[in-house]
Image (cartoon, rainbow, N blue to C red):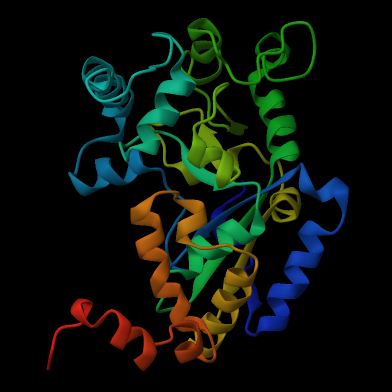
Length: 303
């Protein structure tokens, strides 16, 4: 039986390791479509969905998770139109869950991205201890999940006449994720993307049986530890202020910051903090000259 304990984290201790990983995943075109990433600011955190963490926080039984999920969905549907103009079709579970995640509600979806750099930014931004970037081979997930589902249900997520990759119809979603529940994980996206998902190159990992932890679903789809280790990678970065500044500076030069990932004034304001990673921060954040102050003296309070 495969377990998370069999996964060996690969250490990353210096900036050159970041460049090596970016070359590994981003230079070969065949790598771009199949690998997806997730950044976590604490290397000790498990892979768990928001609904899983909420259930644990309030000491609820996992057996109640499906009822809780549907209850949260019902509550969100009833109130959503008070805040959002264009809501998903009533039975489009993936679009509803994606919208719920967008606004911070607990769901079974695990946030990931097709971009190694986006995942690295989210892992590093608030880190003050070792942090990690996970990499998942989504093609392997889909292939192994098809084996778990069996041929009759696998046709929905396997290219062919009945292919429904976004599970837009309630019956299709039920067949894969509701009845009967099977421990599996596959990469999923709603048919309609919101702006943030487009900018962050977002994608979700969706577990099949939420009465079990996400990691149980994940390990269940692999038949051997070798297959598991080939298709699930954990890159653990040793924390140092020097490394954090180097990576943030590198990402800033790629225009990767809060302002670009979270468009709007709030995202821009939060992005200002990242400028402190620049080696010569006073040049990035210069003072107004005496000439400007004199011309607009009314704007500056007198000492």
